[in-house]
Amino acid sequence: QVQLVESGGGLVQPGGSARLSCAASGFTFSRYAMSWYRQAPGKERELVAWISSGGARTNYGASVKDRFTISRDNAKNTLYLQMNSLKPEDTAVYSCNAGYYHSDDSYQASDYWGQGTQVTVFS
Image (cartoon, rainbow, N blue to C red; front, side, top):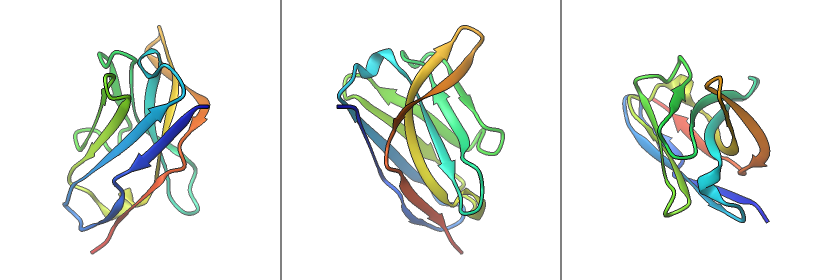
């Protein structure tokens, strides 16, 4: 049974940092590309960042580039998202997804989702 469990969300002041984790089980983590998505109230789900199965390739959404860093530890079956210089507009539920990296340097989400963790950036 595939399980993705996010943690690390909470309340953060603008300009602050937070680190999200996504613990994976029930599938061969190292064979999947992984990603973080977020969804704010009243908005569509947004792809934040993705990373290839071995970690060599990463890609970021324009709104988080140079502030967020995606990484993974295949030995621990865990995905991370380091978020720095947080802004109120980063407030959202963040979810991880196990998906596929394609040779055209794109990411395709699968149906494997975590339940999400809330990040609230408040002043």
